[in-house]
Length: 250
Length: 250
DNA sequence: CGGCAAATTGAGCATTGTCAATGTCTGTGG
DNA sequence: CCACAGACATTGACAATGCTCAATTTGCCG
Image (cartoon, rainbow over all chains, first blue to last red; front, side, top):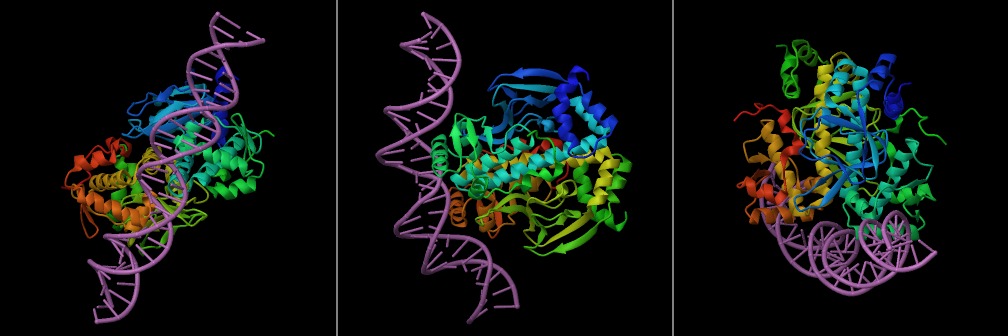
């Protein structure tokens, strides 16, 4: 019931869905030392080459991980939502191999690397829950390789929209089949390996086909089954079966 | 010094490079119950949708993880070499989200899921080493997203060749700048999101440019720096700094 | 030597990229 | 309340990277 509880609560709830935690586990998680920072839209949480001293939990807002090629092309490799521990790897690997950037204004809770190392050394069950979390991240990376490597532009974007829909819904951050997409078309392009121009064309096409409805940054999915089919989307890779249910409010 | 030692030794050596293990850790790893199987070229170790009862350590040979889209296109998402624990996730996640297939004839040591769960519950240091391993896998997935998403065919293939060169060298499985590529051009295509025909053209081009030398399945890299530049390859993402050195024989 | 998988090559095509102009929305300051 | 700046979205014309289809060659193995 202390002030920090509220901040770390989202994280605790997520980890609890990865496996049962006992009272001591919960206590250890909630007592993780941390400082909350407000991050401006576009600011970097981590830069490639950094040797981060802390890992960041997203409390509110959205962030992406991305890499930039020598030619200057940017590829977004994942999108993170509140409750996600971005850069947990920072606590175990020595040097960051990618950037983490705020997509919107964010609040993040920064936890010192040392505290995380101690936590996982002393509480195996917590370590396991965190590990499962990074394994699911890995599963999503794999699906992204498939998305970018083997789907055409239309399916690629449809797939991304399906993934967001499900992830946001499970996290309780979106109504069913309707959500605010926190990305510009340029960022969508960087996530799908396309150009902004082409993303625009495909979005228009998906609208014309009645597969999505757009107004502002909001996306509505009038016919989930149709979009799912267009995307070739199958949610196995999100491992929602690890989430025994009940995170989302109506 | 028992028979199993030899089989699991490669794995032990790799995990030891992820962080110091004490005698009890080592013992627990080496006493992991396992059965060695010979796997035919092309056989599946895991299929998408399986609920695997064991995880497999590659003792010899090569394997890939891949997914197939609804349209039937295949995307290879990673390539694994001897000493790699493929499908460690199998022990922590409920259902496999991808296939694991032998690229060549392989020997694998299969460890029951339960034994792994017990190991990580009782030996945090071992769990941490394994976790780091899966984090590095994740880093490689991220780089693959970039490769497939934002590099043209020439750089994409050059990048793959650079990655193999370094990984094989570090594992002591290849002489410097020369190795046997265990993949057909069709498989290279599936790993890079290209078509076999185009892979062929690019390989021919790289040969003509003097960036690689080919004979049979062997690849030689006469000018590492030139190939590295063509690929935009930077090995940070392999996190070789976690490997304090000394795995590779001359 | 035949059989097969893999590699190579050519010709034509199309999905997606490039470049550049124009339209739209939002917030801000006067 | 309006004008304007700036970021983002939209559109068109054209180019090109990489794909398709199909034939042919090479290398390997019994």
